[in-house]
Each structure stands twice: as C-alpha cells, then as structure tokens.
Length: 252
Ligand SMILES: CSC[C@@H](O)[C@@H](O)C(=O)COP(=O)(O)O
Ligand SMILES: [Zn+2]
Image (cartoon, rainbow, N blue to C red; front, side):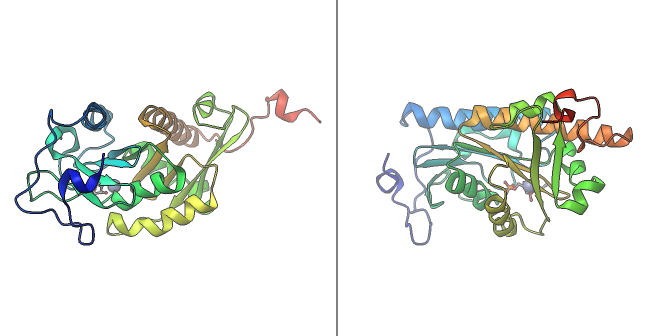
C-alpha cells in the first residue's frame, strides 16, 4: 500500500486534505481489516482485565511499513473500525478517521519506539494496577528496575528461562504521555534484553514481533507483577534465588 495514493495527506504537516478521506471499509484490503480488528478486539479484551479503563492504554499494530493506531481520549473498548488512524513507519499519519475531531493517540511516539527500535509488530500500553503497584515496590523504586527470578511465567518472555532474572526498567511518569518518549528510548537502549518498559505510577509498554507475542508477554508480565506484589506482602523477596533451588545453589 502506498500512503500517498491512499489519502493524499500532506506529509510535512501531517494534515489531512479536505474533505476527509473515506473510512476504513470493505474497499480496504484484507490485511488492513485484520489489523483494525486486532486493535478493536484486543482493546475490548484488555478492558475486561481492567488494563485499558477510563480511556487509558491501548494497542498499536504494524503490518510491514503500515502502522494502525487508535485515537486519543476515547473509550478504547468501544472503538469502531472507522476510528483507527493509519500511519507510516516514520510515524506520519497517512489516513485519518472521517470524524475530524479525533486526534491520534498520545502514545504514538512511544508505540513508534517499539516499531523503530525493536522492529516490533505490535505494542501494548496498559494501566494495569499490578503494573502500577510493581513500580512502587521498595526494591524496584530504589533500583529503577523491576527484577524477578524463579517463576514459571518468566519462560513466557522471549529469551528468558525459569532460572533467569527478568529485568524491566522503570521510567518516571510525566504530565503528558508524549513526554515519556525520550526516557523510554533511553531505557530501551540501556536494557536491550528487556521485553517492556514500566512507567512509575502509570503502567506498562510491552511489545512483540506480532500482536500474539505482545499479548502473551503482557499477560506473563502482568501475572508476574501481581505475584511479586503478593510475595512482597507475604514478606518473601521475589528478586532472590530461593534457597531450595538445587540447580542454582550447586557449585559449578
Ligand atoms: C486516563 S487518561 C490516560 C492518558 O493520558 C494516557 O496515559 C493513555 O494511556 C492514553 O492516551 P490516549 O491519547 O487516550 O491514547
Ligand atoms: Zn497511559
């Protein structure tokens, strides 16, 4: 698909021509329909988990050089197909919804980091309570990173095994979502193995090679964040190798 011929957007200003372009409909090829369905469907699913309530959070999907993204400030579980923005891989809007009041998600520059720096096929942003609470755990606050080891669900994170320590960097929240972009990029450069970035008192950005992997990793991480909080409440250190792990305690 060529963005210029699709919509005629002025790429210098990112402004749509007038009158507004046609909506996403049956005239679009199958690939576009699938990406849009993934966004609307997953947002509904994530809403049921309490991860994208109150208009917060969302998901963006990349197919080749085309990126699909929700508008800003709308209830993400009630997105309609025609509400979805289409961008190119540089983050320039190529097609906007017919409702000209809609603006692209404020998460745009953060989603673009996942696509540009990790070649991700999807990036999920949640306001999960487990993720928020994990950023406030004492060891996490002091270290600026969430650490956990010896949990089965760590195996759901690419390049991680049961005995590995999962490390997720934590960045400080800002007044506006877009202002997180620089510190998220710095964290991604510093933590090349991390599958995600936590935002203190805010939530999580997690990516994957496609939406299936991003969804899986998000679910594993959220489970781990919740377990870590509960372990902490029980007085158990989730960052330490358990003393009964024969494999880790054995002298080499
Ligand atoms: C409850 S408002 C939350 C937003 O400011 C922001 O954090 C967010 O995640 C969603 O931004 P949006 O621009 O609506 O896609
Ligand atoms: Zn947010």
